[in-house]
Length: 487
Ligand code: HEM
Ligand SMILES: *[C@@H]1O[C@H](CO)[C@@H](O)[C@H](O)[C@H]1NC(C)=O
Image 1 (cartoon, rainbow, N blue to C red):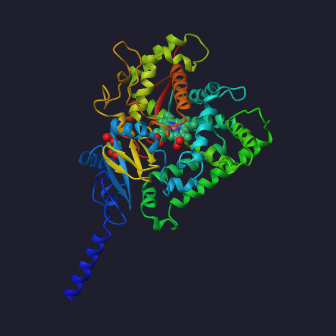
Image 2 (cartoon, rainbow, N blue to C red; image 1 turned 30 degrees about the vertical axis):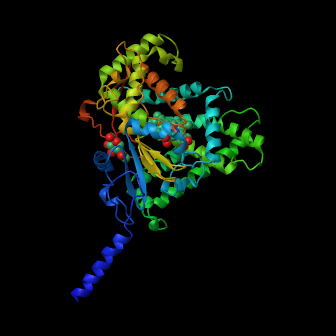
């Protein structure tokens, strides 16, 4: 009896030894994985950051972790991130496939499209179209300032009281990107806007949580009726709403006279015809959905962080307001160009982005075999650039661990941007909405600070700066006091 148990035991041990997951030769080091699950059991799903920090300390700036049977390489600090995404940028152009978020987009769209002509041509098209944004009569700046008026109206209703700014910034960010894409905005009470926000928020919650990790690590469970099914349903709902919108839009368009991004794409489709190019209407729907998603949580969470810091640092807020008043005088509204005369406000906005780290990691995939710091990384390897480690790296910042606008000011009080400021990542796959995002942050923050004073409610206790972890990071829900400023 004992003998046969021992044999079974030996067999199991041998089996594990036999199928033991082994890192490829000269691959970046990391914790020893177990079969099937990889390093899943060494990572606390609810707060993985501590574990990743421990790994980086143990194994260095370039280390690897197994998510299931597949290893991912993690890059920590400016030097490693730069060497990969800038010096060898041509090797890191892919996106990981066959995980929850990329399965939802089915290889189309833009954000998660793997390296190839579809990505390349749509990236070029987006950059060009956003840059030449004279489309129609309204400039990008006008669209943003127009939405800011609605923000003001809503904040005025709360003046003299308190409010939770979460939905406010979410709705505004959604409307601005929608204005760029479709030339129209939704009323903050509109049901379509609410449905978009519901789908996006729910999907973010599920993909960020443990269910996303389980889907990604254990392919066998993918067909089971588990919460990640909802992500695919919501994806369909959003595509349907976007598709309907594009159809209505088509009916009112004048070819050759684009009013917005969608019109530009439709013109491009006319021009290309059916020459086997990667431009088509199904792709258009997914492309628009992706741009909508990309411009939503990123911008609104950055604003949420910014207002958390401004309400809890009244002296910083006051200094911005003084500078804004001086520079704008009685001009009707701010313009993006005014930023060059507002070094302090610029420094504050950048510091909000640095300290808030809205996007903590960038997910890439090698599109060919490459080398990094002497390690060999084969084609098709999942590579995670740890942007938060760069934004808070010791040696790169005067005050890496505290909120301090001096991080962006030189001795003369002029605005200066350190090299390690990479909230939009770096290289050919970096954020393509950076220009739009920077314009939004500047115009919204300046307009609101000019009009209102924001303060931390007396009864709210100590502010909690520990963020909610996810693909995008946001502060814990908070309330802020709003007062109209005396002119
Ligand atoms: C403060 C706001 C924003 C931040 C912090 C941010 C940050 C980022 C980061 C870190 C990435 C990943 C880059 C990489 O993989 O290396 C990214 C990708 C992307 N962002 Fe943004 N983003 C912001 C706003 C926007 C906006 C407003 C748009 C709208 C046009 C946008 C569109 C995109 C797209 C399309 C990608 C994927 C690019 C590609 O795969 O080629 N982002 N963003
Ligand atoms: C990225 O770096 C930060 C700061 O060093 C750390 O807390 C976090 O755990 C790291 N994340 C990953 C995925 O390595």
